[in-house]
Amino acid sequence: MDDCIIIGGGPAGLTAAIYLARFHLRIRLFDCGSSRAALIPCTRNHAGHPDGIPGIDLLLLMRRQAERFGVVREAAAVEAIELEDGRFTVVVGGARHPARAVLLATGVVNHRPAMDPALHDRALAAGLLRYCPICDGYEVTDKRVGVIGTGDHGMREALFLRGYTRDVTLIAPDGAHGLDPACEAKLDEAGIRHVDGPCGGWAIEGERLALDTAEGRQDFDSIYPALGSHIRSELAVAAGARASDEGCLEVDDHQRTSVPGLFAAGDVVKGLDQISHAMGEAGVAATAIRNLLAEQRPLWR
Ligand SMILES: Cc1cc2nc3c(=O)[nH]c(=O)nc-3n(C[C@H](O)[C@H](O)[C@H](O)COP(=O)(O)OP(=O)(O)OC[C@H]3O[C@@H](n4cnc5c(N)ncnc54)[C@H](O)[C@@H]3O)c2cc1C
Image 1 (cartoon, rainbow, N blue to C red):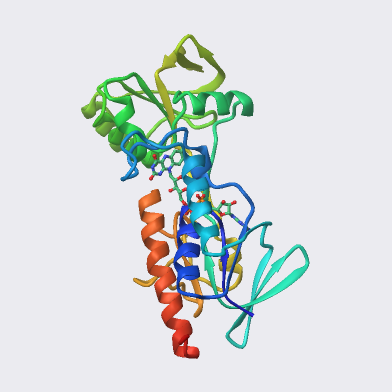
Image 2: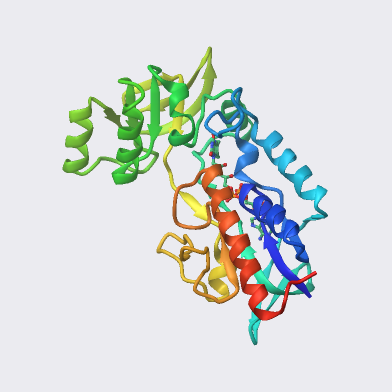
């Protein structure tokens, strides 16, 4: 039986793996290879990398560090977490893996605008499309910025970006029209333009990303989709863990979910979706897991 099975090999899962392996615990890590960190062309707000670092390089370094302590990343998607008499069984490809504790670090997936996937990836790599103003709003300082979104969520993202540039336009996605008067008033006060979609006809034109709006074709130095995310918490929720209406897992100060022995860290948990936060939560979770296991049997050498 493994001491702990980690589900997810992004910054949260890999940090936990490094800690748990260094606690001399018997662990297993399953990862289906779709970390949000792998989409980062170059992160410049992650401390310790003054010239920035591409997300895939950061993941590679973390994987290498984990391997040094014996962690093996098994490339597979976990299908279920079952719980019986305080013991977990993690189901992967029909195989059943028993474990004393489980850490869920499965992250989230951003909803994308309706555009050709190859164009999406090119625009993302070039910084024409961005998903995280906290991460890279600095890079659009004094640039021409579009936000795809509506309602409260779109308004908040546009207002946040207004802290970097005076040239912000909020564009309603296809099918969504209008904003309530309170949102409109806040946008007007901040000098943020708001227009309806359709948000089609995406193309890279020169150095900019262009699209169709109700007021004609517009182009931007960067566009931020603010269309929400899918929270990958289903495995934990099916095992009985409490989550918010959007699906973010609820945890206590030790990253414990409402199911004893089931822990969670990173974007899948309600909180700041950042690498530093994912790593911090993973360190807390790993230490709490170690101490829980020590209550069950001595971990002496
Ligand atoms: C374009 C972009 C730019 C960003 N820039 C920055 C930045 O500059 N700075 C910053 O701090 N943050 C940035 N972020 C946010 C950052 O990527 C996330 O906060 C971070 O990756 C969260 O780590 P995580 O381990 O919680 O989740 P993830 O990195 O998403 O990892 C989750 C892992 O779980 C795996 N998984 C999911 N379900 C299963 C399953 N059933 N079985 C097995 N494995 C599973 C996935 O394959 C994935 O590898 C950016 C995000 C994006 C999209």
